[in-house]
Length: 331
Figure 1: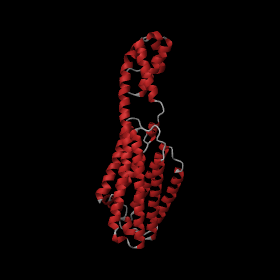
Figure 2 (figure 1 turned 90 degrees about the vertical axis):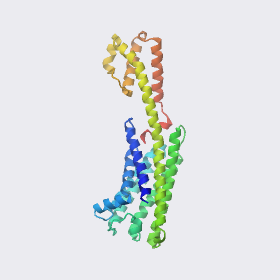
Figure 3 (figure 1 turned 135 degrees about the vertical axis):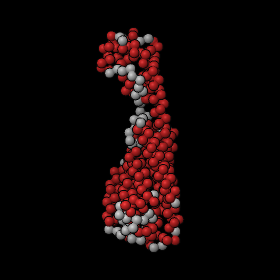
Figure 4 (figure 1 turned 60 degrees about the horizontal axis):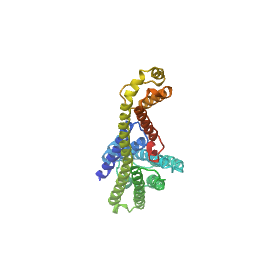
């Protein structure tokens, strides 16, 4: 069953890798921190890793609490970011407050419980203790609650203007949330059987089912995040290619205008350089520089050069026009 833990972890780290790649395109960190925390928690929860690290920490299953806190913080932040993007973040502050209270309760419940002896199957080993049943129950109740709320609100979002990859990605995220609710419900059932003392008959089946659902949830989340990200990377690459072409078209115009008296007067304020770059700043400076000279002496530019500049100006204006499908820039 370790494979069912490892595969989702690899998928999560692939999302982290894709988001790190996005930083090279000037994106905001967005979900990077949240996914990193979830990926780290999932990594620490792999049975061999968990046993090795927890024994190093003293063998009191303190790592279970650490995993819960990392997962809780990461999932809460993911929910906050998703709901902010979709414009449905009406009650997220309430969920954050509930999560903070439950995190404090988790710490207290684990400290007053007897959890000596590292155990990867934590519920199976210690679930007959009322405090541990409550400890596990509160975490998975919150997990199911925030997953369900995020799934419902994401599904109810305004889809107007969404790109195809954005729409499919967020629908998969919503589906992943509902699978997470099913996983939490199954885990709650396992906890209830342990506290009643009848869980030994189907512990393995419950654990397997839970891990399958969790793997499906993580995969849905990963694909849901990666699809819009891939779309954004493609758009960024296309925009960079267009920007390079525009700069190549403007370079001879800028070089010629720099030698004119009007160009000499405008160069200082515009910080003009002919270095080969593909940055937006370079393009904007050149465009503003040429625009100033067009005002000072329109005759310095030919009809063809004016057409080229107008076309580039239209592209710049279109690139900065508000669009619904770019709302994910903060995710």
